[in-house]
Amino acid sequence: MGTLYSNGIIYTLAQEGETVEAVYVAGNTIKETGTAQSLLKKYSDEIDSSIDLGGAVMFPGFVDSHLHIIGHGEKLIRRDLSHFTSAEEMGDYLKSEAEKEKPGNWIIGDGWNENNFLDRKIFHRLELDELSPHHPMLLSRVCRHAFLANSAALELAGITKETENPPGGIIVRDVNGEATGYLLDSAADLVKKAVPPVTEKYISNALTASVHDLLSLGLTGGHTEDLGYYGGFEKTVSAFRKVLNGDSIKFKAHLLVHHNVVSDYQVSKLSETDSPYIEFGAMKIFSDGAFGGRTALLSKPYNDAPDTSGVAIHHPEELKELVHLARNHMMAVAVHTIGDLSLEYTLEAIRAHPAVTEKRDRIIHAGLVRPDLIEQMKQLPIVIDIQPSFVPSDFPWLIERLGQERIPYALAWKTLIDHGLHCAGGSDAPIEAVNPLEGIYAAVTRKKPDENHEGYQKEEKLTAYQAVQLYTAGSAYAISKEHTRGRIEAGFEADFTVLDRDILASDPNEILEAKVLYTIIDNSIEFSAFHH
Image (cartoon, rainbow, N blue to C red; front, side, top):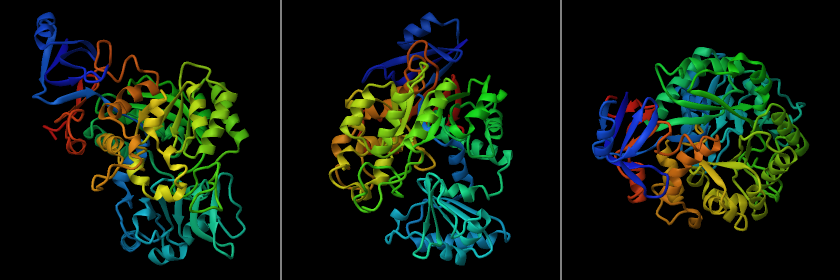
């Protein structure tokens, strides 16, 4: 038996501007599209439910191609520092939070961003000690490549004046060699190991909160990287299986596997999942850091800090070994690479150990490219996971970081697409807001909503159609599902995002005003604005 959807604008996204009047779905698959009259006539005996879209606009289901689903849930249930616009405000909040906690309990916070403070202040551990004298404290920067820890946390982690920088990380020190509490990339792992492990109930709660939020924002799925952080592979996958069981919540999760847990994944019985809502993807590797903390690896020094060119998390030969490991396990790779030198090393590693299956390798972020690297990427079966919201977040300070000469190749989405490279759209939540409409708006306007200019590097703006394609066909192509997801066409999965207005035919400012009316997965309404 099946469902007929009609009386709205239905974009197939098979080609620009193409709409159909109605869609007939049998089970969880689109059977046919056409006029309401012809479908009613042809399938009259099989249609057991009809959904009147009431003039609303239906798209293929929006999918976030790169996020951290549990991390987004933690942001919803934990201390969120991302909205503070001054160091004083953040300090007052941390002090009041510490006063509520029993002495000895950890104060964990996420998302601070000194670029939102007038003085760009980064707290020193002694200042954190004053705010929280009886609690160890660990605060992650918005990029999650830089952290702040107070003296109690450093002590529990065993970090002293003598502690050497771990591979791929920096313990920032003062003139006397003492740690300031500012930890870059893998240096933070020393402190994270001292934080008490989370429970499976905590993981499930974060995951549940996250998925409900994602559904309310019109997302039918997400490609997520969570499996290396929450007390091991088994514990985290168990939570995914429990929450995304297809009974209480439907949501299509594609799980990247961090290289640290690939061996657990290979031996685990949980890696063979029978759930249609969980599948495993590429091996995730971090190649460098981020622009914010100047840890993205550049081929020439930072314009505003000529003493550094960033951080290589792995030596180029180690990077090749990790790609080789993935190939031995018949896996594609998904490599976090933001700086141009990091991208150069990543492409070298992929060429040294080419893909062994039909699965596509993924370059996550590609924050800074060069013409020669674009040509190299065109020769490889790769997909680029881009995050449009990075543009309004990182500009204008990114111009100071990189300088005028390099900036045309920073977050250069249109250049990548014009060269025929396949791009998928995501948020990197919780680092950026997870709302796909904010990502689409950022791709189209390249500015914050309250900014009155034509957009940063305005020649890199995408059309609304290109931007929506990132979250539909782009995300499907990234996981080799372009023949079953990302379009409204016979044979495709019945995943739909229904909005109250046509974001492809309206003023870009209307994109942010659009409301999600329904999120439909496998022909099941998982979110409705009318029963909320």
